[in-house]
Length: 324
Image (cartoon, rainbow, N blue to C red):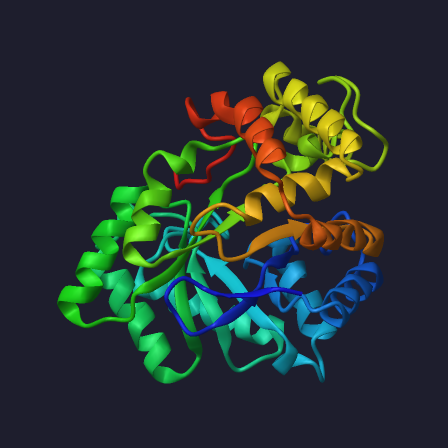
């Protein structure tokens, strides 16, 4: 396993991380625990979850999986997206964040979070209130590092400026949709992160499975795939991205790789990327994803991947999650 610093912090994270959105939903408890065990045993230390995944079940299952193994994991969770319909059940106010942190700590069966992330920018709460609250959490020892997610470049820059002005803990990372099928972060976010020492944590690195090459068309979803178990997920699909997935699959076959591993290897080589979080519903998927670490992209293959994905630098991101 290769390890990298998370942004300019001193925290070392595995180049390949484990996403757990499927835990308690598409992967049951026993399967999820096996996946965590397999990941830890193969050097993956970065485990990412959120307070809303599978209605809090993801956090609860991870808490079980890490019993007696907590020190082996860099544990990341998030808060900020809606947990309910009440007036204070979303956003990044002090009220909501303190309540959600305590809930996450209980479910995760731990007394500290390694990386606590704001799930999306909150236009209704002053950034200073959010950042002061996070700074207090770090001072209390309940949180070690803080990060953002689904922030625009200007929103992160504003947050970093406030933190510097007030002497608060600063964001060390940001999560964003980033893949061969979504290169929009390269326009503004990547340059910002390189300049400010913020680590990028891509989510949807395989574009919801499109870059695995398993979707021959928009309407043909393999049994057990995310698109078949969650029909809502089809909103992310279009003819362009499906065609890109087929091109990546062809290139991967020509070079003796799986399409998933090749897509992940390309992403790991991008500037400012600290760790790439990939979900799994079976240990075999983690095994295949680990093969990406052994791939060294030659200049010719790198150029081909860059060229076929270049149109995806422009337009709307593949996914972004914001408060209504």
